Amino acid sequence: MFDCLHLWGFCDTWVNWIKAVVTGGTVCVKLNNVEGPYFISHKGVRLGDPLSPILFNFVADCLARMVKRAQHNGLLCGLAENLIPRGVAILQYANDTIICLKNDFEKARNMKLLLYLYEVMSGLKINFSKSEIILVNGDNDTQILYAELFNCQVGLFPIKYLGVPVGPGRLHIKDWVILQEKNLKKLSTWKGSSLSMAGRLTLACPAHLYIICPCISYPKQQLIL
Image (cartoon, rainbow, N blue to C red; front, top):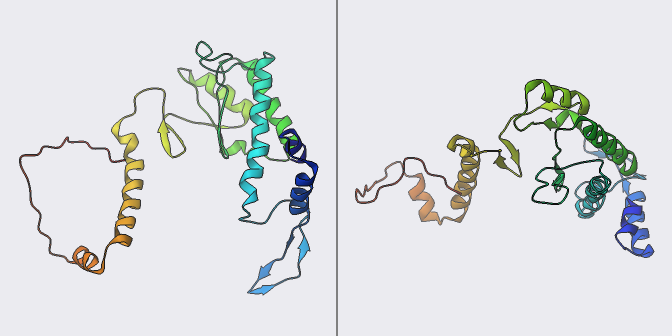
């Protein structure tokens, strides 16, 4: 990680500060409401430390750089290379990563080796058991072959990326139901916390008056975002 900070152009003083925070933190174990003696963790930051996300992003960015270098050397080939030079091979947001590869088993082996090298270099462990292999217009045998190579599960479209369903074709209304219900739940909580006392009494009152206006027609299926 400290080598990554030097590559990003941080000075030695700043890197030494981060090293002191990461390797010199003290923690204790609390058991039955009794705190034990403090000891030096030697590795990592405390839970909830605001430095943790930014340090993780510095290290995770190295994976994108390694993938781009492998593409430049012809070891990997991404998708949509007719639109983008060498294609799109990796999409990252925080700890969510999507790797896009052409149907080439040898280049898939190169990607697996690259992921192993990234683990050794960064000290991070990729949880392959929670990862998924999804083929676009591929047969079941090929999908199982790639799943065995990466020790991953076999997934299906649509997938959920950043909380939004993603698929190769048009999504159906049922694919958006989960997102719609999630937003409605958040909106109901927000409305309840913003209402005045009189509004809350009206909301809690069992008797309601509904006015139906026949001059306005709504579609049968609505999507609220």
